[in-house]
Length: 436
Ligand code: GKR
Ligand code: MG
Image (cartoon, rainbow, N blue to C red):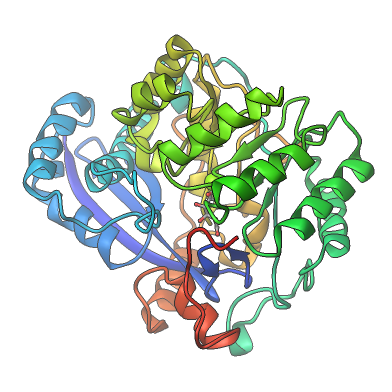
């Protein structure tokens, strides 16, 4: 069996005006759906980052993918690695403003999409779910966390294509509690993450306190300002939220650089505050891990099969973290149902995964879903692994065509949250690290 067709479908899905230290989300998020077909008549799919960069990177490896046996993933990894060595200056992930960004990004990200589509094919060839192809499940229904965002009014999309604003404007602590109650009631999440780095840190501290009051100590809380704070501000927040972030919570990327994170950790511990620090910014590839561990800069690594190199690398990461004594969770970006299942399978087949994973899925709607049969259900905060071969989902081609049309109609081909801030909030806005 060899791959005969390699389709790259750039799509756009509506997204609300969510805020973070990167700025403000655009009315549509960009994604790419990958589809492989084989001589045996099997099709495999995947979803990955969107826009010109990821599409061009996929396009560039077309000759390595077509004609390939989908079981031969190791040699594909090696071939892509050789290319990456020659192209180290490729497009960067959205963490490009932060030191420590993954230099192997293009390689790992491109490989991941193809690997998942191949594993989907293999699952179909042998009649097994993808996570079972990868060695079986540590858990049958991986848990995800509620992912709260400060946001402006609006549900995403433009003009007649504008979406209903399910959660409303949310730019203060009280409205964040409302958002959390709504999201938890709808999806049953058992852990909560707050995207910070938007309001004054005192207000974000107050938000976490209100969430704690509302949900009690059995619902772990985490806050992620994406490096918007200095070491001193991170320490103040760490002190203020000592109680609230205990019991399974964490402080995520409070400040930039491994050195900054290590300093925060050392000084918090000196004050007997053992809140773990998590990161998807300071640690973005395997090379970072031993250093981060030696420096005690990061205690929880935030994986992402989309850029750590796919499902098998996710398993390697799980083992790596276990050996180094690090926790493991998963970060996310706006995504559709194919990625939801990639994240669920990746989580299912990791022996060592110590927290519920992030997902942006509640921020996307049925209208944009490209998965046949509609949105992937999240029940009691968990995503069930379907008893179906491969990823367990297939493409709705009408919906895919709509997603492609939306993409074609957009003037942008790259996420640029700073540009959205300039357009809608403040013409002089810049991403400043640290802001506080
Ligand atoms: O969607 O704005 C966002 C998030 O800030 C995302 O871009 C981050 O990569 O969720 C991610 C994180 O945990 O840092
Ligand atoms: Mg993060």
